[in-house]
Image (cartoon, rainbow, N blue to C red; front, side):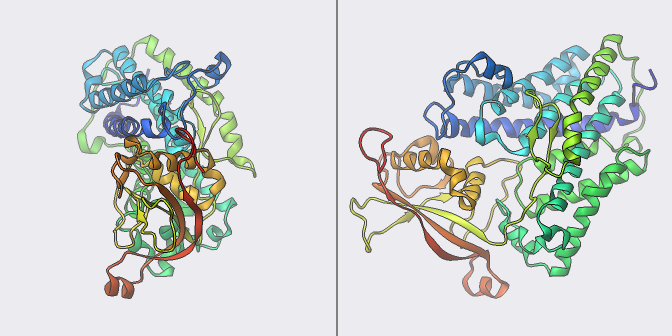
Length: 476
């Protein structure tokens, strides 16, 4: 079985599995704390109570055909418990088949959320954690050496992630080819972090070097992942270094950390921890791994063809189980940052003298004096969607009215998603309105003079004073 086993990657497997368990824990915690307000039975986009068998077949989920808030909460907190157990190494205490079942459980649970979470779970990192999670099931535990076919599949996932992201940029906005996208990106990205302003204020020649390095790492380095060591390990190190740069410069949920975890599987860490001897893998395990590898390679046809297509799709799954997916990000870069500011008032007849109070979000820019925070790998779904809403009101139509309605009713679950509400749940505003501002980072001189992190300019009123009308849920 020498062709099947790769014992030199035992420590790489261990690091990957623990990082994945940690990210699973963050993902389930995100769901447990946010699902009621977003897609619960009284959420902004409630999931339908029942679906047909055909719909279930295309989006399998434990939460269907009937989904209740209690069932969803139980599944989310069960996912947290399973992830914590895996993080603590519970899989190493079980026989091989038991460890595989233990890794299967969070994958099934999270697939259930992704397949019923609609637009709130439409991000690329949701697909990536499912693909990596399924491969983790096949990696086994300390009872056997890491299987080489699965290690290669992990590199294939990393290749598609990086190369797909590189291609979508090269084919997309011409500023990537002109090396000028990063003149704007650190300022206009969905959720800047505490260091994003410093990155934005770097000299333009540094931004051009950043863009050029991105092309090298995403379009050239991924091919080296399939070469012998130490070249493959060097390619993985370059990928890790790039991802740490992205971690420092913004908030992209668990995308960067999961990319790092995938890259770790291409590192030969035996010089750090020494060799280990493993028993011969049981025949059933070899058969399962080889059969799964063949199936995943067959499913790779459409994602691979997508990479070669001029109409390349990004962040798309090609099968109901989300096993082999297409990835990509920032094919175009915004030159100007717009933000929606939501305000409320208890004035029953708003006029020029009305006092409006702003709602503050946890991650997205609001108060110009507030420094951007670091939240990743935690995912603030509402804050991310507010960024899209500022870009395209039509994109926000399915959920934004529901969001305003819940502010007008003082919905506690919705208010928990915010950093600050100027109105308590038992005394909600009579009217809310939405203003559109242009935001930019302050210069060094402006920062010293005002203490602000952002400078903002009023653009227009996006939605005028709105209040509830008629029965519950009615609006003017």
